[in-house]
Image (cartoon, rainbow, N blue to C red):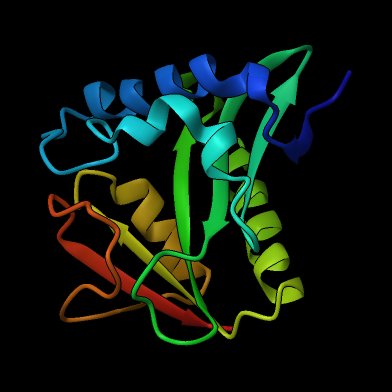
Length: 160
């Protein structure tokens, strides 16, 4: 069986929460004001029932390797969505899985009629940040919208 990308299912909640939180431990990132402490991290399937949102997971042989999605975060400019929950299991990094998940998410955003995508991140996630740069995201001087993740200090935007 080969790797497949699909939308989140309710059965994925616990495993995805574990993958997301493990990234903070793997990269020794402070968790205050981040998705690590966000209660929605344990209920991602329910979160992504929001209209014009999607969370894609990478799966092979019923094992999850990561996720990435699009969410209409409150307070963003018109026709702008946030690229969210971009996290990979340590065994999936450096294999193109993250790039595939991000490109699927960007394609979804285009299909939903969004004209730009916003990202918040941290310098410790330098590999992800370099992917954002390669995908055409540009740095902003301050955050947009109301993500509730005050711990993030890198903000980027991509026009679609």
